[in-house]
Length: 474
Image (cartoon, rainbow, N blue to C red; front, side):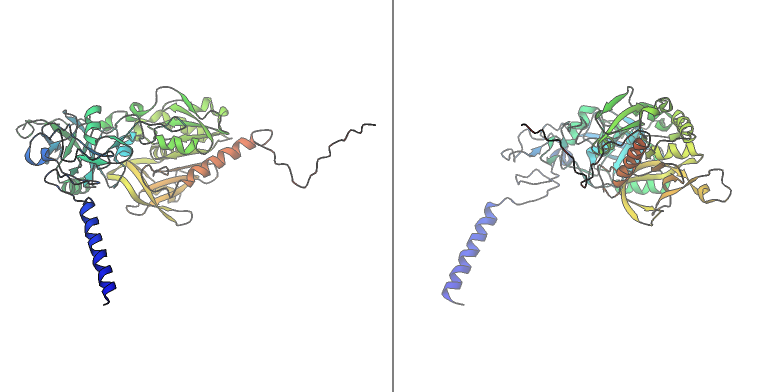
């Protein structure tokens, strides 16, 4: 090697060493607070040695968006008690209060702010299979151009509590304004960390979703009294989640959609209005048949709990199905179950439900499989649709779950009625099936053209030349 090359190599090596020394190292410590700048560091002495968190962390000189949950209180014991008798102990990082609910799990890797504010989780204690939760904090209540929340699916936390394996007390994200623990405490939602969520999921998969209590306080381990577990599914959760007043979004839209709110997500509304629709949101039990002449289509939203509690909506849908001049109807999640019941199908409770962002749904029309976002504990019993001589006539399977064979959608053979069990709007999750909104609105626009004297706009043929009279001045 020449002297020049040796000198160049030594210079490069020294430069690389200086860069390595000056550059912050990304280290993830699970035992002590580190002064190293980290994107997602689970390092909270509160949980490891049961001491109060320091008011001034070693990394206080780092600027936003690298934030610390610096006001974390003294660690408080917590326990998740299942009706089956199993108890899981950990540490509280949310509100200092106990709550009851149905313990369910989600396999989603991201999107905890969206999941926790999804009205379909109302009445449930949510167990995250993703080990690390809270690492990107919680965003603000900012709204978009339509007046809808950009980062949440409703204006509050809907679940009864959350269970995580590893709560990240340091968060990092450009939209974050507070930690997950601060958010839960502010909204009165208990939360527990440090439990074996894998063991909980095994129990829920083997024994089915079960009732549970999330208990907070120093006495959780000493409290041996028999606990009564109220079942949230006996309540009409749809009524609780639904709007109480009629309101309209994007009133200048070119096509008018009536939406029955059974617990609608913000992104469902966004997917409609962003495509040019004017959406009127109606309460779950509103008799839309009396006003359907004012709309071009009907949308049935998602919602929580047992669909049999929404019997009024089922009755209204059954009436709409008999209309000799039907308007297009589309349903999502709870909407799929309510439309199926109105058609004559039964519903049943799944053992542990389908909740996550990776559920495969097969389109029975073309055999194509889409990865979908889902959140439901009930399903339609659709075996009668393929049975000869079935009392349910005119309907067919639309989508089927590739994992467990459960129903993922139905459609009418001759009328513009269809529904899906999954969430085409995702938020979070894959957007493979968002085209279903386009198909529904295309039907609604065609319906509007059919019942109007002229289409929305008249395209002037390019081959026609206008003759403009010319005034001749003598």
